[in-house]
Image 1 (cartoon, helix red, strand yellow):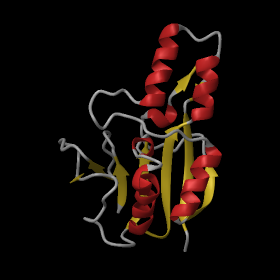
Image 2 (tube, one colour; image 1 turned 180 degrees about the horizontal axis):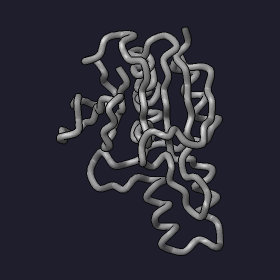
Image 3 (cartoon, rainbow, N blue to C red; image 1 turned 90 degrees about the vertical axis):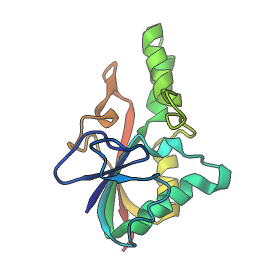
Amino acid sequence: MKLHIGGKETHPDWKILDVLPRPEVDFVGNANDLSQFSDDSITSIYASHVLEHFYYGLDNELINVLKEWCRVLIPGGQLLISVPDLRNLCWLYSNPEASVMERHHLMRIMFGGQTDQYDVHKVGFDIDTLALYLMEAGFDDMEPIDEFGLFQDCSVLKIMGIPVSLNLIATKAS
């Protein structure tokens, strides 16, 4: 099974897990607790703009989430992950050509839209910090990728021609 964590767009090959029940959601649950899935039972996980919603410090929440995702993946299974690219976002925000509305939009990407208690960002990543967390959780063979070609979500968003997301494929160690 392929699991799309936090998904909104259906795809015939992917099952959606989300914290909020909606018609397109196949499994209701929090991304930090995949206990409804057995060890080594998922072939791929897709998570776009999900990981930044977890604390990097309090109770090691971020590492525990990644370890939980790693637990359910089969050996050699892939995590297709997209997070806001803090390096690109900071560059875009500090660009003197950016309008006030563009900077406001960038701020919302950095800190979350804050439309409810789940829509808040608690950590930022660049390629090096994301790789550090992924390795600690049991992933290896990390490959940056421009686009996954699966969903029309934040993973493909560009502002002023610059991607706002860091997209990476990480493999669970065999």
